[in-house]
Length: 380
Image 1: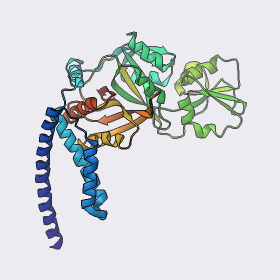
Image 2: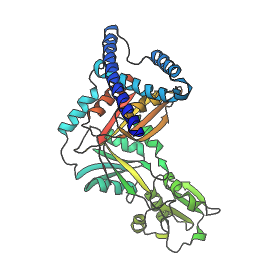
Image 3: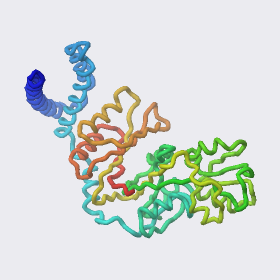
Image 4: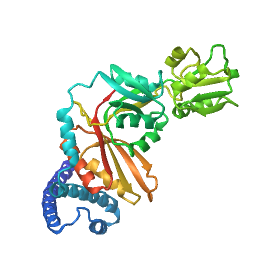
């Protein structure tokens, strides 16, 4: 009975808190109207610092930390509520609406697609997972894939964005800041690296192994067991296999796929030499124009933040306040800037979600640099 009495007290207090929250939000609405009339910004850091200091003193030493956390979230909710009143319509709202209404209901089976590498590359496998009948143009670099889309040589491009073992493909993030494009779909490809040689070559004969740097990183444990063997980064795993097949050397090997062994007439000396068995690479499919297909439940954003305390927290707290799940966060320094970073976000939210629209609107209007990269679904 004692516990039941305590719970009734908690319920009574919670009811009071809800009523106070409603009252506070009504005050926030009045503040928003005042800010509109007087041309004031939504975010007032001096006011928020003073409020947090005040509640810390009121809460006392034992509850100070809890009070600061609760009121930090409360202020974030208040800013979001004011944003609905103050901020103008987001330009991305029209872009998203246009894409939703004008994109075909089915993802295309046939398409012209650019990817980096050559026949047998993992990017080719990704292309064939995304499209039933892709017309693939192979490019010598990731930058060339972006350029092929920019120039209209191909409608789509397929690029690796991250690996479950070696992490993100950082060069792709750097290129994202240079090119204007939209992600329309993504997929994951199981990666199994094999040690490929010319027929008759033994392990002890090998003096050099070539492959893409991601494959080298993903197979670091196996490579560390090979003493005196030179490890050389190459443009692509399939190109590495092709180079071994065309070389006049018998002491060189490639880390590549089992398919490339058959394609280029090589022998599989060792199978599955990657560090972990459950190794996959995630590929994104990009296009020049926004396309949003039914079922899109993943959105990617890119934004710049100053290197100041609390900058990233203020953004992340907005996801939490709207119950939006953040699935990826990647940061890259901005070249030539004074300690500024570009952040890449992946989040799970239906493209039809009002909470997502509100979030995008706030970020667009409050940040100096913000990009909506697309809403899409991922196929496994």
